[in-house]
Amino acid sequence: MAVVSNGTTLIDNGALDSAVPSGSLVLLSTQTASSSATIDFTSGIDSTYDSYVFKFINIHPSTDGDGSLTFQANASGGSGFNETMTTTYFRAYHTESDATATLLYDASKDIAQGTSYQILSANIGGDNDECGSGTLQIFNPSSTTFVKHFICSASTYHSNSAARNDFSAGYFNTTSAIDEISFKMDVGNIDSGTIKMYGVG
Image (cartoon, rainbow, N blue to C red; front, side, top):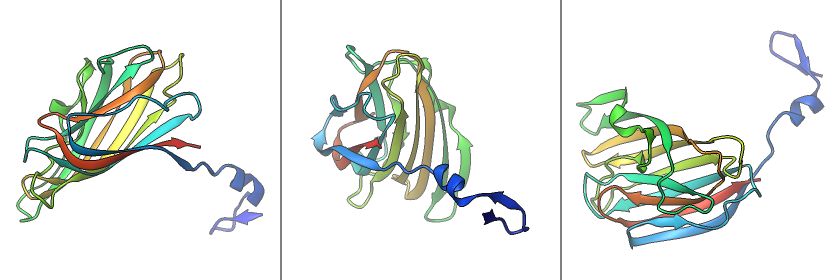
């Protein structure tokens, strides 16, 4: 039997172990940017996995200060990366000088039933040592019953010499399967960086 610290019997070890997720990440695709207008994943997203994880690593913009990494999707048979989304966005921010430290909801970066690209990592610095990295997870994209939820957390070297943590979440408001994902900067190109797609096994 497993026992908690106050001496109360909780549950036997076998039942406890069975409740712990045992899935693993299966690398499906890797794309590396080189002054790329977009990085698109147009295959490999299907009913094989219940969720897909995208890890964007050392994303470096071609422009300093204005460039934010964004994403959108296509439903099966669709084109244009313009699915309807409803999203929310907040951030934490702290400058190197310690002059500014904030945690706030940023309504300018969320979407209410819109078809634009959602910001994942905002205002990435363009100096040689500046970049942004993070993880985006999309749940059950092949469902033809429910909308498609996603969540993202990103860490950014902000153009104002600050650490920034961006959090976004939402859903594609469609019951059609999502089978393509596109990433791009909202200004300029992705100068360098890597995006990896994993299935959650």
